[in-house]
Image 1 (cartoon, rainbow over the protein chains, first blue to last red):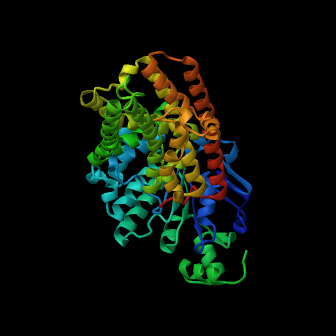
Image 2 (tube, each protein chain N blue to C red; image 1 turned 90 degrees about the vertical axis):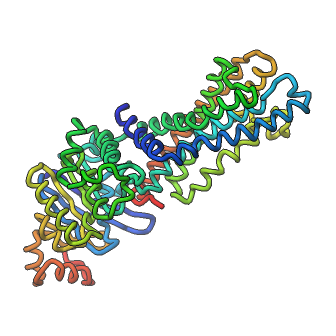
Image 3 (tube, rainbow over the protein chains, first blue to last red; image 1 turned 30 degrees about the horizontal axis):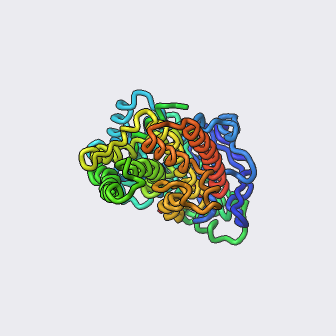
Length: 244
Length: 263
């Protein structure tokens, strides 16, 4: 297994945000992390990114404990995209990609910037300041930043939140296409069930810091006797008992 | 240390400055106003005070040196705050750059920002007030070094506070230097302070730096012991600042504040 999460917990004062979760992700697979707001998805991603220190448990990547990696050694292999964090607004798109490309030690940076810009159709606003872009444009620039280093592990936190259906579809198609052409293991946290069904090989459902179910989308829908993932999500989110 | 990454982070701030004329003007504006203000005051003192009658512009030189300290510290804080204001904080802390490289980059870029503001002001003082800080010669570098280290230390302490308490600590960032200024004996000799405060003041590098500056300008001699003392004290504070920064960073990881640090 490429990523192994073992008994991972995070306690913030008296709030147990993540409660002994266990899951594994195979190399080059996409796993969806679902659950209602406050269920511990972002905290789990934060721990995987090294931004939050776990209270307990282990994160093993490529057979090595995250703690034993040097900070820059592991972060070179990972990247993250979320609409809730932004790139410096006063820098142009090109400048932001250059700065992050250099921070990630990307070789042949100019070629890489050109390549990713063409792929994500952001070249025509290269010289504009990032803060002046529409949310759809900003989103694509953030995605470009998160792929600048060709990460082995890509963590996506609601990558299409607040996008119109057209741009949302463009981003989803791009992620699909990127995955098919590149070796990348993806953990996708999303509230968009269509997106999850379309992109994920399997899903993990969280609630109140715990994993309450897991499997492929079809398996989970069938198991709970619902017609689609949205209905299944609602059932699990509203149920009082923990099902797993 | 990976200097390419240090440069990359510095480049982010160089682009920020070079993209905006108002920012460049802002950097130059305040030191220049300081020079004008203290230039006229020192001119008045020169004409009216026996103490200053031998040394034209002693206050102006002190103002320039103090402004150097102020600009270094504020620049360090500003660059860190920029990441919070632009909601780029998480992106920076998930990039493969070590904490030591972040500190180094901010330290090096801080002097660049400080010099952009201060060099034009210091040059302006020459024709306007016939005062050149460069007349201090080589000892000027020995005075600037501890000021630089102490300015960065103050920056480290304020950014540690930002990591610990979040953006609400911002106001302290602006107030930090004014808090130490009275004890720094920038414009007056240490004897002016009450005895109890003199003991505290001697624990700061500022007193030794500004006493030495006055010694050079008034007596035309250099007391290297005072310079070594000021550099040594600054190094001790700098090391403490780095330790506090690291512990604040580890504390922020523990509390999970790195992932949602923003306005």
